[in-house]
Each structure stands twice: as structure tokens, then as C-alpha cells.
Length: 180
Image (cartoon, rainbow, N blue to C red; front, side, top):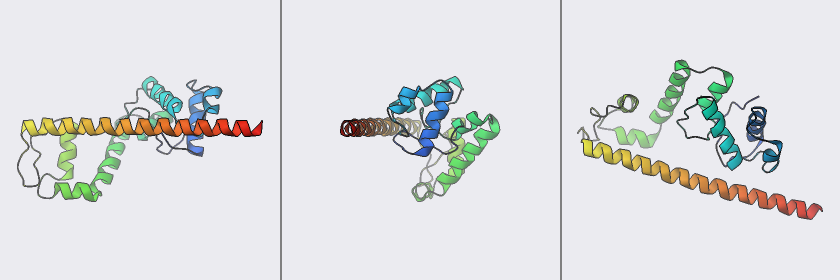
């Protein structure tokens, strides 16, 4: 059985162990892979999730290797437009409740307009907090900054994941030395 909770690299626990067992049942993790970090969402689990997503046609908006709504939907066999709509509604609801986003949209385009523009790729009607449209140059700069922010985030996440996994492996080696 697959986990029905959102999971990401660096997490630990029973839900991660369930994900690892699911990936093993899919032939994407070996018992040896799991034994090297049971219940730890490390590089091997991340790679197996990426492989499973690719194999099952999951284009994960939260990032390849993250077990989220689209992966859960694909694992359950409930894929299609309605699941994408429910994922969009979930993100839209969460973002509209975020005080930082609300403060950025005061005086300019509302969140519904921004979300719609991002979905259809037409940012020409989006306005800033003074009600002024963004120039194509400003739009390109914002997109580049967003891409850079994402790159920095995923680089930091990968470094944390690597450090956590190395730490867990070092602790496992220490335990093995003590028990012998």
C-alpha cells in the first residue's frame, strides 16, 4: 500500500517506511536499499520516487522526487483532469490564505487572476500593487528570479538531504560497532 500523505526528502518515520515498501513492491527499491536507511527519505528513496513518477507519467509540480497529491492520485488510479483541478484548488486555497501573498496582491491583481494567468501563460493583464501592468522585461526578470529561487531551494534541500542521510548512515555504523 502507498502512503496518502505528502512526503519529501529529509523526512523520517513510518510514512516514509510505507513509501519505501511501496517502491520496493514496484521494483524500484531493493531490500538492501531500504536497509541502508529504513524510514529515511534519502537519495535512494528520492531517486526511486522520481523513477516511479516518470514510469507513471506524473509531472510533479512540487518537484521531482516529492511524494505529493499527483503521485498519490496516480498510485490510487484516480488520475485526470479532476485530480489536477483538486490539486489546483488546494494550492489556490492555501496561497489565498497566506498573509504574505495577500499583502503582495493588495492594490494589484488578485490571487485568482494571478493563478489563472500562470495557468494559461498570459501574464499581460497582471498588475502590481500600484495597479500598473508589468512590462515584458519585468515579467521575464520575475520569471528568471523565480527560477533562480527554485534552484537555490532545491540545491539547499539536496544538501540537507545528503547531510541527513550521511548522518543517519554514520549513526547506523556506530550502532553496528557497538553491538559487535
